[in-house]
Amino acid sequence: MQLKHNPPAAGNSNLAAPQSQSTTFLQARQVRDRYNVSDMTIWRWLREQDFPQPVYIGRLRFWRLSDIEEWEARQASKGAA
Image 1 (tube, rainbow, N blue to C red):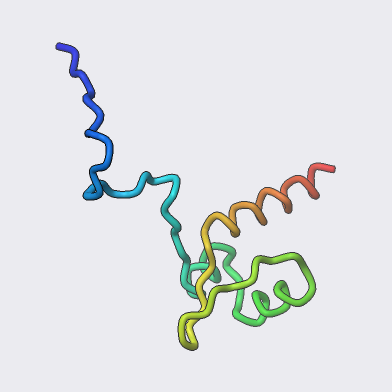
Image 2: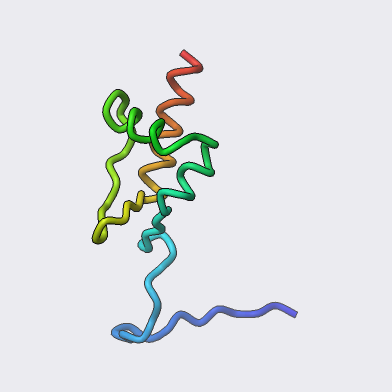
């Protein structure tokens, strides 16, 4: 049995944004865990390397996952060169 996909009518404002348009944020703890580093290492990376700048909400730091992934890709290309 083949299912057909019928796109919703234009102008329907109740639709969720496509996944590609959503932004995922990582907490500082998640960034530290991702690389198994200390907060001091993240601080150094922010000053000495091109590590993405965090987004502050109050006193809490968050990083866009897309920025982190771009940084990882740049680091991988530097290692391959």
